[in-house]
Length: 322
Image (cartoon, rainbow, N blue to C red):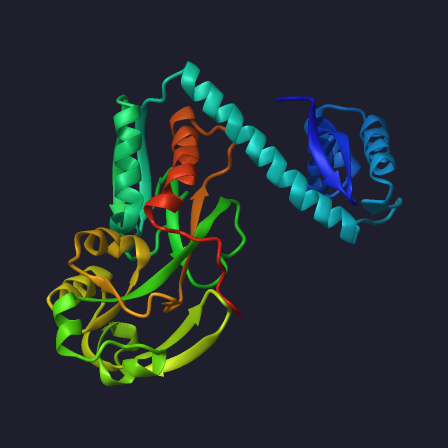
């Protein structure tokens, strides 16, 4: 790991010791100097002196500590978040370099939803398998919940509306998967092409089963505008692939993950409706067990997914509005 990294702070560029940032993260994670000293093998006084030097370089207190209490200042929490991200990026670079020196191998067990798998994950896994011929996969593609550790999975890719609960797993946000409104060209030739969101009320809706009784869509555009529209429920299904097939057959308008319909759009089997709008979507996150003891093949795959899945699934940086 490099000893120094460039850090933009309070409008000035300074060189900050990356090892000191790593120690600061360890102190925060350990909730104290004594625990951090035991974890790193350093003397407690050495840990305290290095954090004090870091605070002097920053020009402000990062921690509040005395003999009875320990807490992180508001600035300290901000520095911790950036330092954590820097260390993760440095570790990913280290994984990349090491993966080129020692080819990953063995079997990797992966969990994802069926829609996530077909929306782009399968494409990324095939790319990784082509590059690393000694790696085998066992894929569990299901909409049911699994326990990554208890069920013996090495990695999971999750689509979620709400924030994932805190856990011992390492979580990496990959992006936001928007749902696009799509229909077949034949359907749009028979019906009046929607020009504004309110026009959808006159169209046949192809919706997920959970929306069958109240098929209301919350639409948003890139300018930040939003509106709610109701559609009829011509067909309701519990998987997006069925709705994609129904839309391609000319039965109505569906709201599908961008990655799932990208090929059909490119081939002309589907056409985007109201292309300036999206009908919500889901956050896509990758979860892996603690990096401690993680085999090189899993670390290499995690890095590969983080680099390639956003493009394959047409993920954006957009987060849904609250």
